[in-house]
Structures are given as C-alpha cells and as structure tokens.
Image (cartoon, rainbow, N blue to C red; front, side, top):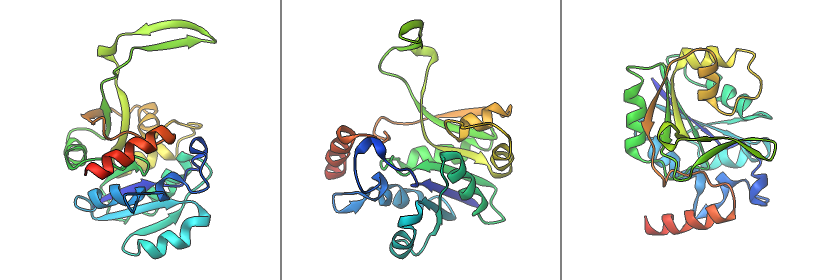
Length: 214
C-alpha cells in the first residue's frame, strides 16, 4: 500500500491569521483540499494531521480520510502520521498542506523513484544566490549549480522512515533531513515553482491568483 500523509498541524504564526493556513479558503475551497484532490488519485489512503482544536471539524468535512491530531513539533506530527498508516504500507509520501499546487507528475515521480532509493525529496533550482552567514557576516557564497531548494512531498520506504523517526535526532527541519542523518541515500525528483509553500500574506495573494487561473 501507498500512504499519503498531509501535515496541517502548524500554527501559521507568520501569516497572522486566526485560522491556520491549510484551513483558509481560496476560490471557495480550503487550501488543504487542493493537495488532497491531487494525492487521492495516486495513494491508497490519506492521513491528515491537524491541530486538536480543528480535529472534529476537519473529521466531519473529510470523512473519507483518516484525520489525526498532530504534536507540538513537525517531527512529532509526522511520526503520528506514520503510526496511523495501514499495517501493509510499503511506501509513504509526506506533504505540507500549505503547498496546495503539487502536481501529478511530482507525485508519480516520487513514487517511482522509490524503486531505486529508500528516500526521495522534491526540489527546484534556486533563482537567487545562496550565502551562508557567520552572525551578520557572509561566511560563504554557494554556487547555484550545486544547490537545490527542497519542497514536499518527500517519499520513503515506510519501514526506513519509521526507523529514522525513532532515532534521537533533535528538531530536524523535515523528514528527508531525518532520513539523511541516519545514513539513508536520498534521491531527488524535480519539483516546480508553483509548488511553493504559503507562508505569509504575499504568498497567499499569489496562491489566490493561481487558484483562480486553475
């Protein structure tokens, strides 16, 4: 079985909204719904991880999917999603609900790439030059051709990512970081710039334009 975990348990503090990003509506549809509709064509089950206070409402609205309560951190929410997967799950995709415009090609590429790798991330080429900092001084200027900007979904052999989550890595930035820290060889598939993460109000305005065009 292939499972899709959609993480929607964040607090959306950078958006300054009383409603978490995934539950806002653009073009009369919750942001969460866009990725669900794309994922459900390719996975056997969808697990949606939400905050406690939204659990009952989302459970009523998305009754065909498994709605579970997230944790205090992204890692904890992701781990709870993994534990909720069907016992016969062999592949799992983990996706940020705040990336509503993931497309079919990305999802199928992630699933197929798992035939050759234990973990797969989605990434795009950076437009801007990336620098590293030492306090407020530039420490290094990185070549764009050796850099990628990660997105989600990130895909895994189920037993591999479950084992990685049981490690003692503290506060990993995402699941691929966690897998890589355990020595897992991670493949890459091409993302797309429309698959951006809605983080602030400018992102939300752009998302509304894209949704209207679609």
